[in-house]
Image (cartoon, rainbow, N blue to C red):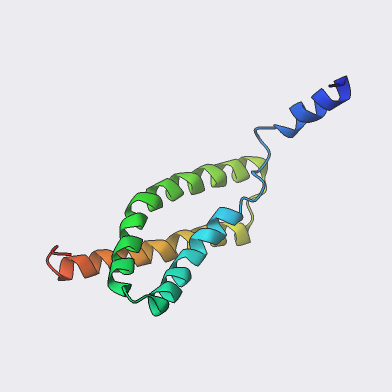
Length: 114
């Protein structure tokens, strides 16, 4: 490996640059609920799919919240946090959160027997 290749590799690993594809994970999170609704319409066991999708959110939503806080802080430090990106991050968190709240409401209405 030549000297010029080593400097390129070192320069690419800048810890303060925004993560490439930082809108990809929020886009996946935003598409989670429509995907589940679509799968519920196709599935014969819609009830089980609904329960598993909500149970997965109990585990995944806190992890996603930590990710959003880190990427938002990183973008704010770099000056790349725009209003659009901020709103997109907020909406991509609220949509799965409302799905989780709907799941929790459903479970409590069945007195926890689900």
